[in-house]
Length: 282
Image (cartoon, rainbow, N blue to C red; front, top):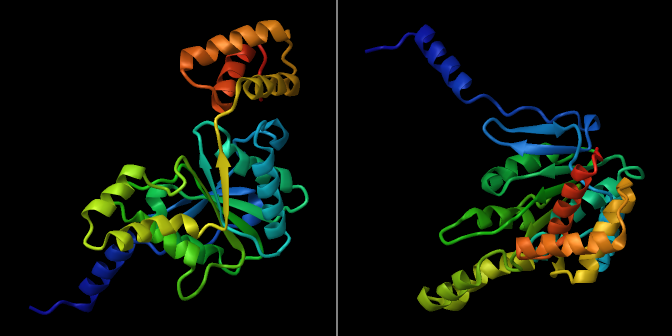
């Protein structure tokens, strides 16, 4: 049975509607940050980035200074490293990335941030193609990165870090955060050692992923003085008045109910305090 040219054209049009061509790169001047969405591929501008000023991040001075210097180099068109921020949960890893970007925006308006979700890593090459050749500089940001058993997404990330045959674009640097230094659970690594035909090679393939980050910035649990200093810093910055004795008693009780002490817990207590006092944080 022959198919007419008209019928073939209708089929072709239907296939194009089902699988539209990738969108053009957006006008990067419109926003400071974007979120990558695949299927269809697009970069969506973020009107307002959710972040706090970098000076409010307490207890991470060394990591702050190192990441700030690396990012300033990159924004100025100089060589810079990919960075892995790893360690204790709630200690400001993602907050630091966003805060450093915000702190440098005034001096480097062409410094942009592109957030990529872990589950979208297989499409990251197409995202890089949109950024490649643009005059702006891009921090590609992947938050809370980790991999489990039978998770092949790490291979997509390797392609970004290694760059493949084209190489990573000169105007892109990757910043990722993780609770794990090697981006995967210790028991997963040990399981590879015990069950693989060639244990050393199986472990090396996965562990070597973190080695591809030039900067490793560790974040460790804060002590009580740092925890209280975080809260006092928030109070001073937002004009929340409370005496030290009352704040100390409430903050310690708050952390006890959470079973942990971190920058995130400090912010949660401060949010509750500001709400009780009728003070808006916008």
